[in-house]
Length: 454
Image (cartoon, rainbow, N blue to C red; front, side):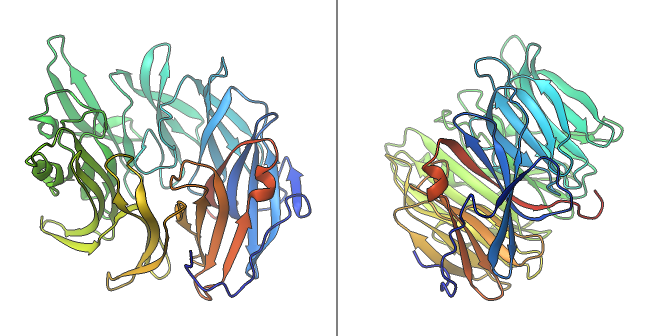
């Protein structure tokens, strides 16, 4: 695979030569961090510092003793806190916060998380940091059932928002962190259910608005999973969402809608599974989407859609309130990363997905320029590339991971950093570390520890 011309030689960092293990960071560090989970012993957080187009340092922070099996982690927006998610092993389990600058530990609650997908995935949304880093929302299964919590970091206050939920709730913060959206289901004893999007004010802890979205599930023969992939437009007026995200709900229609939060209207954008239902021999409907608001009115949608008969992959553009789409590329965008400096958008693509295996014949990486023209930066028919896609806060580098197979969930092979000014590439090879006793390596993203406002 050739993405950018490799002007620099591949840089394989010796894991033991440049590494330093610390418990408290004496000064702020900017870099890229990943989580190293060994088969035995305590996990470590590693921070890669990049300067002069090379990896100049790897600083590692050893995590404290476990409260179960460490399953995943999620960085706060500034990177100074990491939420650590533990599953019972065989006991324990729960949520712990760890401060990467001071090594402070806060154990919030014991319980079990819905770890069926990565906590870092925009589609997961069972946990969410506010964009200002002041709040963490999550739901967890405890002895009292599934409870949605809101944690205020500065006040060190944990508040239950909704208790005895029927299922794990999806959630997302508004761009200015003034509102928190989550979905709620209520069912009576006779099986009648209503579904709503609740908008919570995190300061007063009161519901600002409640919008009924029960119409999303009309025509389904079963009460399927709830909405997912919620995303706010940058101005906070619109909230896009995907209906019915449970892949086992085979007959349910799975489409993209948006809520106009000023009028309360719910508008359908896509009709892929509505059309697939008409296909002869269609038994199950498939609709997987990834969405990204390019600006206040332009919504991009990556779609893997169809039925058990045939699947379509494409990425389209909608200009709200217009419900007509423009095709950008014949591949589905599945991850997005925006360059804050040039406003260019990078996204990972999946093409030609097999109905039988649900694996693509190729995966790639695309740049969307200022004119919304898609430019391919490379593809692979063997490995998953451009996973964990992100742009550094200063806009200097785009980072992504490459994996040993076509699934981003499988073992990681390399971390790649591309200098957006020079197109030079730095590759961080995990082959040495993977030969040791390692359970998993999880890329977490960019950190600016000690940034202003923390």
